[in-house]
Amino acid sequence: MKFTKLLPLALCACFFACDNGGKPTSAETDDPEEQNEQAKVVAVDYSKGRAMNKRLGKGINLGNAWDGASYWTCGTLKDAYDNGDEAYIPLVEADVSEYANLPFKRYNYGCNDRLDSSWSNPISDSYFKLVKDAGFNSVRIPVRWQHNSNPETHEASPSRIAGVKEDVKLAIEAGLAVVISFHWYHELMFAGNHIATLPDFYAEEKAHFAAIWKQVASEFKEFPDTMLVWDILNEPTFKDASVLNEIMTLGYEAIRSVDKNKTIMFESYHAAKFADIAALKLPEDGNIIFSGHYYEPYGYSHQGHGYTCKGDDAYAMTASSDFKSYISATQKLYPDKNGGHVPMNMGEFGVTSKSGSCGDKGPSDKYRSMWTKEVIKVAEKYDISWHYWGLAGVGGFEAYDKFNGLWFPGMLDAFGLTAE
Image 1 (cartoon, rainbow, N blue to C red):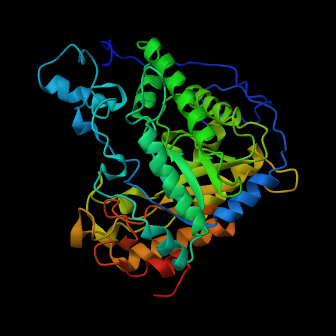
Image 2 (image 1 turned 180 degrees about the vertical axis):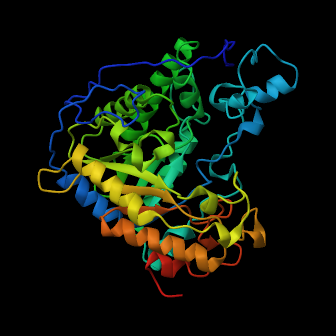
């Protein structure tokens, strides 16, 4: 099944009423353009979410595996345009790069599925013991659930479900709690940013998203509630806060319709910025966690990933002031009846190393570990659980050298774990 012809693109605002079984407890975004209606702040007993967050503790991502792309097996819409098929991509005022992450066939259904090997970085069974022995408490496993899913029945790939289940089983057997994150749903992000011109596409993606979550949550009910957490959507890039909340609420309700007891994570827009907690409308559910990603400053952490290779000259540390402001906002918006606020998780953070595209021109091991150690110190000061990005094969951010079987210098010390 191919995408229907896309029309010229324009952005619209889509306001809605948040109805999630309980009253939303959130507040207005700091951005005056959002114009979200201010809701009364309600204190919630977050003891269940807090207990799960404590169990997550120190964690690490097993990224670039189940979240990998296999678009090249059938091509993308951009490929179609580049090959002269303008029926799929009328440029008009649109930037063709917007289509770079959209598959030519819907969800790549019927194409070759490379499962967790799409980026040649499969999760080794040995990783779970390795991580546990180092002293970590949990792992975060990003998954592109829409990949190779059925666009007609809205069912996830049986092979993908079976493979992720096996990894969750291995993690739990090793004594590690698990966060499963719905990663890189580009089709949904694209649809949510072009509602005015593609309303049917947006409606279809919402239905697919909800159906996938119901199926996945049902399939994984066999695992203990105390060992598995659902992360609704990784790094939302919706341009409108109302769309963000509609999708987050949709995912939340889909999960809760079949799973009443597992902890659920929410992320905000602008790719999961902690500072955008004000844009979220969280439900009055005591078993939730607010998760943000932290790479500040990007000019230091992301050298070689869209940023100039300046090495240690780009080093800066603003975590103390940054997190102080995050905590202040969270306490005001989502207070806990028992004191404090909604539990918080740092789902991703890290710095690229010399193993990345900058090579010797990138951050040194010394400054990389120093940045990591300081960010963790500040996060733990506020009882924020964390998951470093990532273990292995993540474009230079990795903490573990899978080719030589060694942790990169300074990283375990930065994590506050086993001495190297």
